[in-house]
Figure 1 (cartoon, rainbow, N blue to C red):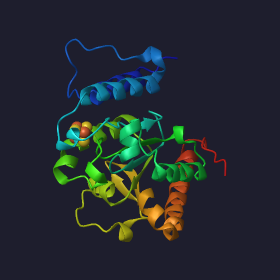
Figure 2 (tube, rainbow, N blue to C red):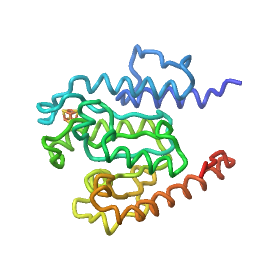
Figure 3 (cartoon, helix red, strand yellow):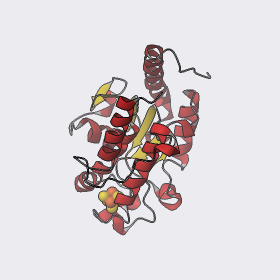
Length: 237
Ligand code: SF4
């Protein structure tokens, strides 16, 4: 049976994801034929990618090889957000593919997901020179793209990886990650769990158990919301 209210909601979300504040006079048709809301999200992410184009909105464009947009399920329940691509990511145009990425993948699998079940991206989409922290003006130029990715994917939970992404999403310049990790915050209504960046954990392996504690809280919350929906999440652990 056709659910008209759901379809109208999907259409409005589609145009919102494309950046329209009100319906255009001659709107392009949303791709319902490509698989319902998943198809709409794919189309919206592709539209966002096109909008980024060969972006030169900040100085990071000068040193990059590739823009690293992000990857994973467009309808992922869980989203991981780091700070910026590194050397390997810049070469391969994929997020978290170096040593830190391998550690993140192991965490994701330990949580009961496959890497392709979640969505992974960064606050800035281009590599800062010699892997320095992204600067304030660079984050300001790029964060709009991340905001739209989150709107489109609309995950049930976000895990922010490290100080830079947590600051950018919570909007608190003074926060100390070690003091706030492991506690749920909200980003525009979406629960957000700050935890350590995998690159930090490679340097400080003794703190891995803290990140695993944070991940377990995320699993519990996802299982709770799964029960609300009729218990449709199962974990392989
Ligand atoms: S970091 Fe973001 S804003 Fe800066 S050039 Fe890359 S895509 Fe554009």
